[in-house]
Image 1 (cartoon, rainbow, N blue to C red):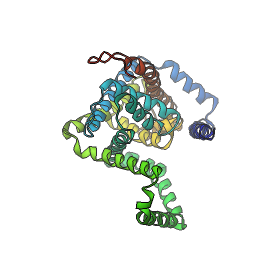
Image 2: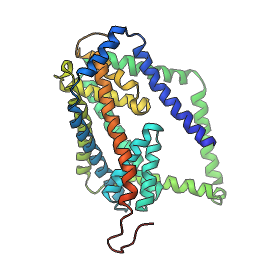
Image 3: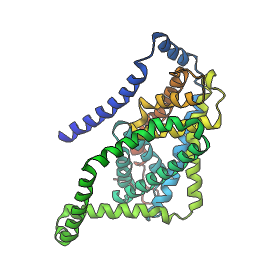
Image 4: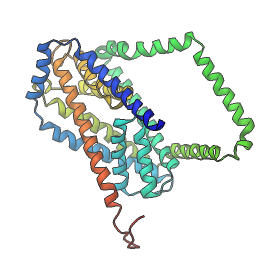
Length: 347
């Protein structure tokens, strides 16, 4: 009961944050501006979304292949179909509750591929860590080449908020108290390690940590690092193209430059990190980013940019929802077929 209540509260919290950002943008719009947003939607060319769906699925295919490369390093050879379907279910679960998707896809592989949860979860952590490093590279590349265009926006929306948070910790004793607690906890574990080994709960924690470390080490054990990098580039290239093709849905944005779309990709990735699924904040970021490039013009708020943001976010979310539901249906069906060697159905 408590667990379900906590889950519901988390869902309400993140949905509330999303709707808050929607309200922040919409509250100052005039009736004419709201009319222009709906007019933009009605005039959009939605055929481009079909191409966006195809590109989106390709990105998930490349991610599945790359994830399998990490899983192979820990001694398992999962079927592509199970890894792909578990990945899509994971993305679907993440729309509702943060980080539930990572747990879900590893649980599925444990059930259908007999891969220990802690080991597969370790590869997920490794994958996420590598993606974050890749994003940091893209962020600074974008900042370097587009410094004059987006420096003011980055400073206002990212640098100053982060700086204020660090100043808050620096002025108080919260950070020092946290460090002190970590040190005390470490000393406690070091002194009572042998006694704690008697408890099953402690043994389970150690097993999970060991699995995590093994998963993290999988990055260094990949048999073909070059192809791992190729698939990483392809994943981010597909993310870029998903946004790029959506620009052609509106006449006002049908001539996008490389850097404008690249900036949208980078900035919106930050939005997705901040707010689960990017709900509410994604369209606002698209509109504000395009304003830096005067696309479609220099008006504030950027009405067409806001509509475009909803279109891109909606297309990406629709892919995840549709693929997630289909995967939930297909997974037990395709795994209920008799084994080719034994002729028996899986339990």
